[in-house]
Length: 293
Image (cartoon, rainbow, N blue to C red; front, side, top):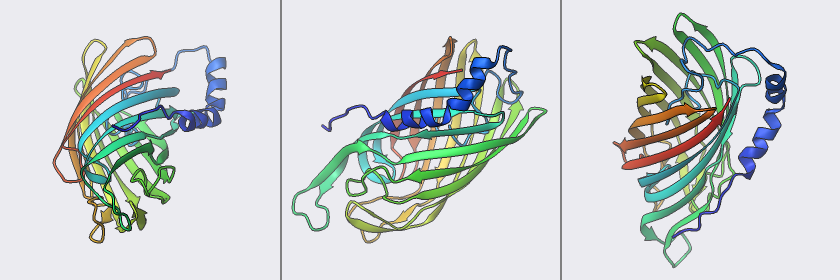
């Protein structure tokens, strides 16, 4: 088994950089923040589509998730992993959200094999993955409809030699809409990721611009209990025809989630997903905790 130490320094450093204005704002504000008509209770967010969601965090969100992935650890296929993913999201100004997440990954290949130039089998590794940063702006929020657009940037903080990252800067953009329907809200989102040619696990792969799409419904099923269902898909990210390792196939999965909001400023989150493509985990179990205000 891989060692599994915590890796929280980088995300919390990000929080210190961007939370100054928000902390000052929260310290001086004494009135109650109005709830957006397209969010319901503040900080009701989807499990898989956190940064793509059209919702904007109320003020600040500090969370962490533990995920077990079986069958694929995107972009690596035929692997199992435990992933710890701390996430920070802050709204320094109304309708604006910035955030980031840097996962710690511990994975094992289902079929170990040597990397090019080596004679011993490589069976997986552990370490910090790539850092993902995003910023988005909600430019419309009225009559139960909300539109948001933003940019996402992946930075190569994970080791590409060990399969923990791509070794490349990957920019992207996205847009999303939330629509009130009944007791909940529909979400639709779409975006593009400009994947670069990369050398992963000592093998060269050709990057392909991928599109990602998603949709779902979230609602408060019972008092303080929020349920969600969502479907997400991303097209092929890499051409791995010259690699002995399988990676970068399309990622298509469905996720059901449940969240408890009954604790002051705290959220308990969980979900299960099922994959329908080679690039998605066959199944994924998710546990999360967040502190938000």
